[in-house]
Length: 270
Image (cartoon, rainbow, N blue to C red; front, side, top):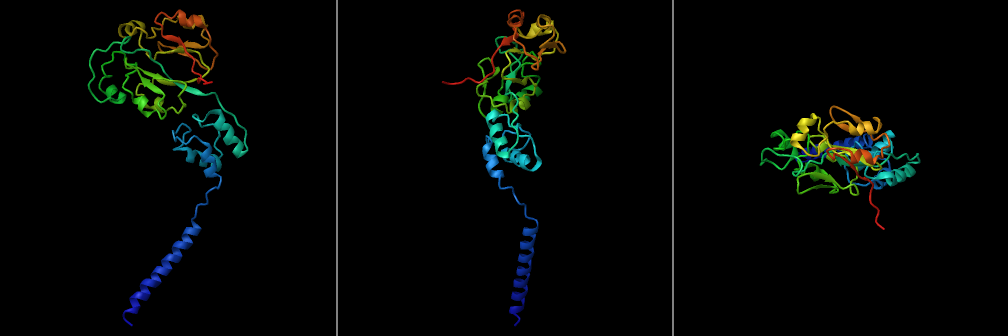
């Protein structure tokens, strides 16, 4: 009889605990929307975070449970927005596709370096080490931090140590924007044509000393457009992408050749 008592106690305890766990699992069960998996499959699945959520599944969950707008997926573009809107039975309102743009032309042939940087091949590390030897304190360091975080390989580091975005590959995830320690990568509408490829806020004479293609704040471009589309901001000409701008004269008359006419639209293969 002495042997059965502990067996009965342990067995009874197990039965009671099992019943409690079963009741708890039923009471605290999270009932997932059956549409969640299907909605997540409509998204690109690259989990870039451009929508503001940890991944595509979390964005899908937020759309279903919180009514988050369906047009936050930048990589998916208009097609994804249309599919998601149709699935959820809401109106599809997609903004214009945005493309990453490096606001610098100062490669090693155009911008001077006073010292040789021999540290980690990382732009953030080079920035902490006095700018990696580059004399322009606003220019591209060219160590590829932005290229490494790009999930689709849309950024190339040239032989002259300058980051260049290939617009036909860019998905607009903005990871490169966040990764650049000098904040010189911006998003621009793909229909835009005119770009000031400089991020320096130094005065003209200092810019000339360190870079042959930097903005010297001469205001020629601003005057040509009557401050509509380009404006001066802290010694730098800045394009206002909210204003349509298609003026070849601002390109040809820029004394530093800082302004370029460049299409950011995706190429279409036929």
